[in-house]
Image (spheres, each protein chain N blue to C red):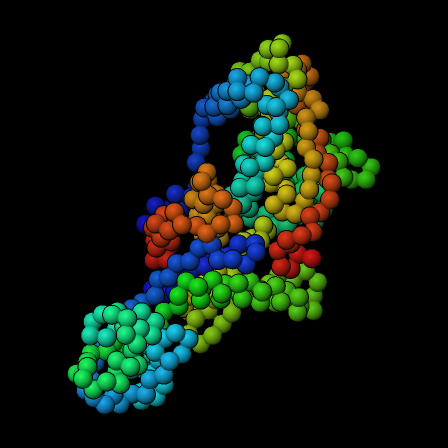
Length: 180
Length: 211
C-alpha cells in the first residue's frame, strides 16, 4: 500500500534519446517558425525561464537541500545535485572570478546535443539556450538574479561546452518570512 | 481520520488550495414545539444557540437545517428569516438540525492570510537571527504544522495532537504539488489550484491512511 502511494511521486526514468530527439524537434520547429537565429535564441531562453520557475520546486521537493548562503554553495548544488538529477551529468566548476561572483560550468558531454550538427546557415544559433533560461528562472525563484550564457559550444567546434554564470544581485522583494 | 485539513498558501499569503477531511461533525436534529426553549441569536450572518444547551445541542452551534431543508445563513431555504420563522407559533412543530458551523471559503481565505502574517511575525519576534516562521501551533484539540519552502509557499496541515510523522507528510505534499500543479501547463503560479482537487485528494488520502 505504501509502495503504491510513493511510486507516483518517485522520479521516473526516461530514455535519454527520447529526450534529446524531442529537444531537437523543438529547436527545429522554432527555427522554422522564427527564421532568424536571434529570435530562436530569445524564445529558447524564455521557454527555459518558464521551465526553471517550476523546476526549482520539483528540485527542492526531491533533493532536500537547504538555502545556499553564498554563490559558491549555489554553484556546487547546481553542478553536483541539480544537473545530476535532471540531466545525469556532473559539470565541473572552474574559472571563478576574483570577486567570487562569476564561474563557469564545463560540460564534457551535453546530452541535449547527441546526434546534432549545426548547419552553416544557423551559425549564430545557441542550441542549448534553454539551459540558460532554466538556470536563470530557477535561481530567480530562490531570490538570486543571475545571468547565464554560453561561451563555448561543442556544436561550434569547441572542445567542451561552457556556461558562464554571473551573480547580479539578491532579489530583496517578496522574501519568504525569516529570510531577511 | 487523524489529519483534519490541508492548506496551501502562496507567497503573498493567499490560499491556493484547501482540503478538509473531518470526521462527521456532531450534529443533532430535534423536533420542537412552541415556544422554543433555546435562546437563539444572530451572529455574523448565522443563527447560533446563545443559551439553553441540552441533549447534544451546545452553545455556539448553528442552525443548519429546518424541517430537513438547509438554511442559507440567516434565511430559510424559502427566503424567510429564520428568527422570524421560529418566533411564529403557527410554524410549529418544527424539526431543527443544529451543528457546529462550517467555515465558509471566504473565512478560510481570511484565516490563511492571517496565518501568513502571524508566520512572518513569528520569525521577527525571534531573538536569534534567521529564525524560521511558525512551525507548529498547538491547541488541546489539534496541532497545526507548517512547512515553508525556499520559494515562499507554505503547506499547512491540521492534525490530531498525537499524530506523528507530519513532517514527512508535509514534504510528500510538496512533492505532489510539484508533480501535479507545477507540471500542469495550464496552471499559473500562485493562483488557486482547482483542477487537482481530485488528484491531490486521491494521493493524500492514501498518505493520510498511512500516517
